[in-house]
Image 1: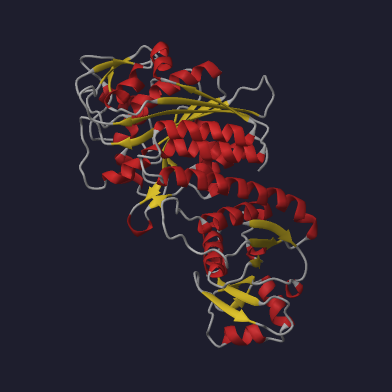
Image 2 (image 1 turned 30 degrees about the horizontal axis):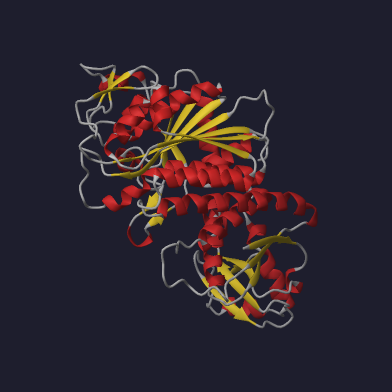
Length: 498
């Protein structure tokens, strides 16, 4: 998809399709009103007849209107003007892209960016426009024999700005949105790949390829022997039952000053989670290929980071392995020693994500980080608590938590903060080790974060539990690419770009 910015009077724009908005009660948006005047009230007559009432999600395609240079005009319902916020703007943009794909137009111009809510602003409108468009156009067909014919597909989409003076800032924001959208697509594809393809080795190869492609990311991959030397006994205990070799991927992007402490992102990379000896139920187990979506989000974020050339230092750590049963697999009752020296009683081998993350969080200390954010499909309890709408957020630093919450709101990739008070640590007590790896059914997401908190005392840290938001089930089954938008907006804010 080729994106661009246009300014000027809408009736003079030569394009295959021109998108304009209509609010509920049949009120024509800014560009729609201009077009209506150009075609001598033709649009107003059509809207007045009841063919388009402006309800959210509705569209109406008009052809060859007199006095208008565009081949087609697509009317998009925006809902009630007083209720038109970021959510409604994104929905209108998504609806318009889906409708454009069915028109046969190869190029189009959307004026919806001029109608974005004031709080969103021109730059925010452009970022979201690119993000939503690429999300709607995403298709996973890596293993499909009969791929969809794209010979008549939409290949160019321009967005308008009300004032020509805003073009430069809008173009920068559009490029940011495009970079983020491609990062989301990478995360989605990695998640959607079958687990016999997306192994720990494949993730490592993808990271190395990303480093070569961007030229600004240095990648180091630690093997099992390297992890043994470092004392990563917790991570290696999860890898004990699989034939796939575990990997520990370290990515470094150095866009800031040498003296500047890096932001560290840590992504859980369980490429398939059978539960190990504590075997999961068979129903829905195929979706456990998505247990590496935290890792995928780190790779997607790094791709976007490099494309945006942000003046930051960022490190990405991806501990990755399968969690499988087998003769050598870790058993409930085993005690393992983490890289930090703390010992862990394994009470349930299906609580494995925290076991690989804790060694990665200890490894992060060597970077003397400004902050650390880990991202993990960690607990089913988070789905029970928050559903599939928002990610869970827990942190040992209030300002960092506030930054992430704000970034999620701006990106419309929202998170909700849960407490990790010291009271919850009682549930992790063990008679045989420094801690157990589970704290029982109550507050499962919180006690999982409390476990991780024991390994993050030397820096500012936040944890994103994306178990409910990383993928969708049912007819829309597939990876979502979340929380790449949240993470990239967090980095944009840190870089002073938004």
